[in-house]
Image 1 (cartoon, rainbow, N blue to C red):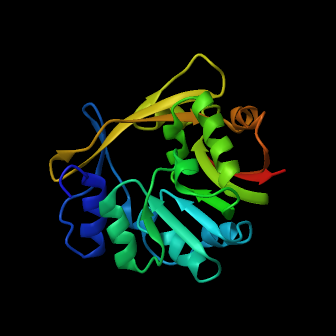
Image 2: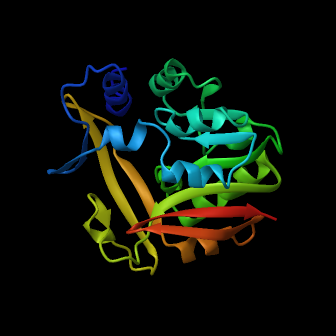
Length: 233
């Protein structure tokens, strides 16, 4: 697991072997990442909210330690994907029945047309699409692997909200409703690759759905963070 500080930190936390924090870093600026709150624990109000909107078969993209996959697989067929093998191993160890190594930005190469009834990407990883064009291409690929009347939930930070600019790694953008976030994870002195997240407001997300079968149906705001429920036409 060398070279994957994020995956190692989650694994060590699960086994009770973590003695150092998982750090988010942007240059000399650092922030401890709240592992227990984000990736473990039983279902909460947000999980129940997701459960009311997403049906099966479900694709959980960037499933982390499997918090949501474990919830959904008790109700519907659930496929969880993670790009790094260490996290896939952790998902399986925690009891996720169908955990696979896979890239959420290469869905057409991994799944058949109309394979899923709904999809979830919680953790702002959709921002790794890198641009509005990349986001639109991702939505097109997601439409390919989901069936008629599918639903999806994704999330982001809203650059138009007061306080978003205080996020670690925040980079402003002259285009209204857009920004970026640059950071890396560090654990036990091992620093991972630099990650570039594109942040987009709900209005920019609506703009990205133009030309795809998706529409933004519901936006659930929580401070600077929001979830968007997408409906496929």
